[in-house]
Length: 150
Image 1 (cartoon, one colour):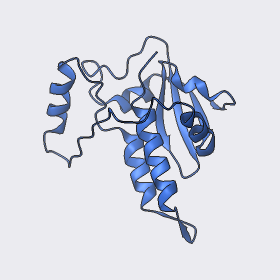
Image 2 (tube, one colour):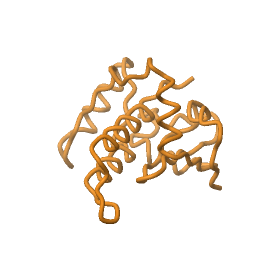
Image 3 (cartoon, one colour):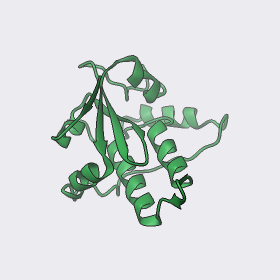
Image 4 (spheres, one colour):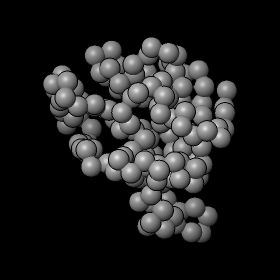
């Protein structure tokens, strides 16, 4: 079931996760209550488990999300660290080691970030997305992926 929302604050709920990005919208998945898809002991790659437990897809425009995030000045992304990798390099091992410290929230292979990076390199019709819009989309994607659950 797809649902466009007026009250974007639902994205802060513990069981709502960013699942994809398009050139116009952010897509979120609501899971069954009690599912902790960021528990790497249970789900090493969070975004596969999100789909297994999905009960609803929530869609919000870029503009709606940007307005919402602009009202959250404490969420500036200053505490986000990225480990970029190539396949078969040991990044899953490193992610698991960091997760086991209990000091970090770890998202192994976050698909929405990859999708937003791909979008920054694509043309839409005859016009590429401008640099500022790319930056807004990438920043919002990171902030949404790295939200602190309530």
